[in-house]
Amino acid sequence: MDQFSRQQRMKTLFEQWCHNTIAEKDVQELMQLLEEPGMDNEAGKLSQTAYFQQEDTPFFTPAEKRKMFLNIVKPVNVFRRRLMYMSGIAAGIALVVGVGSYLLHKKGMSSPTHVITGNDIAAPTVSIGLLKPENSSSIHFEDAPSGLVADQENVKIIKYADGTLAFSGSTTRPVSNTLTVPKGSKPVHLLLADGTSILLNAASGITFPNAFTGNERTVSLYGEAYFEVKHDPAHPFIVKLGKSNVKVLGTHFNIRSYNDDVQTKITLIEGKVNVNNGMMLKPGQQAVVENGMSNLLLHPDMEEALAWKNNEFNFNGWDVPAILSMLSQWYNFTIEYKTKIPTGHFSGSIKRDNNLSQVLRILETGGLQFKIEKNKLIVY
Image (cartoon, rainbow, N blue to C red):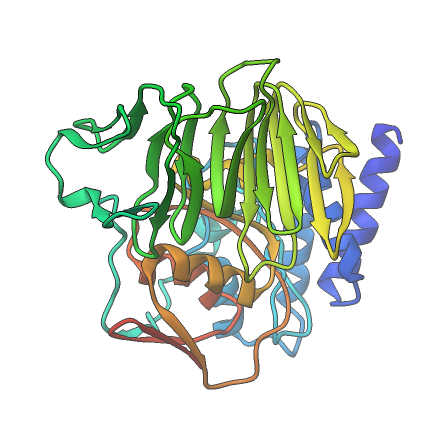
């Protein structure tokens, strides 16, 4: 599809989105088109046109228009374009970074009332982890001082000053270990005995031997982790994910496989991996596994896939339950809906070291209201 055809396609989808008639499957395509290099001018024109058309649209009150345009323009990479698909409103507005700022300045709008009440929840500041060796006592390694934590069959478990947990040594009698990172924890960095580096996200766990002794290096994962596998062609590295598995020789990749997620996503950064003994990924590609079926994405949103590793939230066309589920893993809260679960999709990007209330402001633009009571988030 040439540049002109892509612009026309973007315009068509954008108009459907503004009238709330866009098909579910086309939301992601529209977002990708808005973010393409060379689409800046066309995206800006669409944003301006949509805004000024709403000036005379009777079902938009001044307060609604103000909520749509305030508090969601943020300093992000100028090549990233963000779209908000508003729920509960008959039409929507696209925000383009830079253009949105210009319109806000021109209109001279004031800040809306902050609707979040009650307590707030701060972002995690420490890495918390429970290491459970096979047939041995659990170790709360965040409480352990730097240095030697334990010795397992001649394999030393060492905690570095930066919090990294490392296994070093070899043995003929490997011991299985399970490392669990709870909700409300910063990611934990794990170094396996073969030199493989793993960054484990909150609400995740991994089972692995203290040293690899067989023909294959096998670990089991739930949740999310970023792997930098030590190259060893003679001993393939295998990650088991429930009913799925990822086989690698030496590569960098991200896996997201939470129990609450409908899909498991394997995103390859460099090297090569084989998913479920069939699909071979190339760098920059993503495998999406759902109901036992693997689908290949040739151009996934890499920023979204690696956002957690870069200390960011980045959701691109996510629905409200998926966003709140992701936030609950980081801030450690439960969710209670006092209203019907909202429909519609949101996109946004914000640093993970913000308080919960600051992140929720993105969702407030869609008309949602929240109350934080201790470790519970109530959605109105």
